[in-house]
View: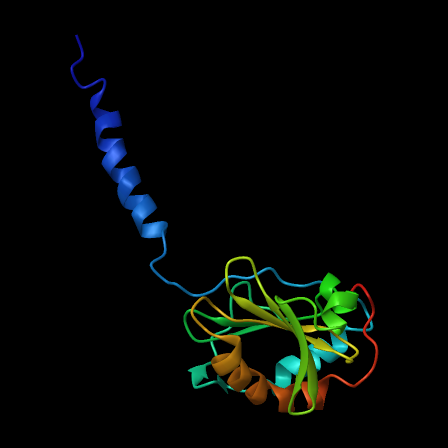
Length: 173
């Protein structure tokens, strides 16, 4: 009888656990879906990426994975920017324009118009309006639209004004 026949499996389990633990990440850096802007939108998004600030509301830039000219991030948990996103449905919702939607507000900060939307999980998302590309900023949980959101939009406005011309974005983004 071979008593060592099952031994390799017994040694394999701890080795697998060590390998899996070594591959798991304690890094809490953000990961984000990268937009796929159309041919008209992609160049202005790449221009925006080049002029984005290194700090946003006091948070240092730390771009999310996968790295892309269409995304950027600041801090941890991250404030996420995505350029070339599709137009949010609420952007053309008459209730929003009339002020009848408590979870979506149109407004402007430092010469850039935004649609501010409260998400189902309580976070806020801001999307540029009246620009040739839709730029979206997502705040992490715990950040308010009123306080930190205004600071974020104030800090990002110069880059948006410099890289994303005023105009009508394609519906696709």
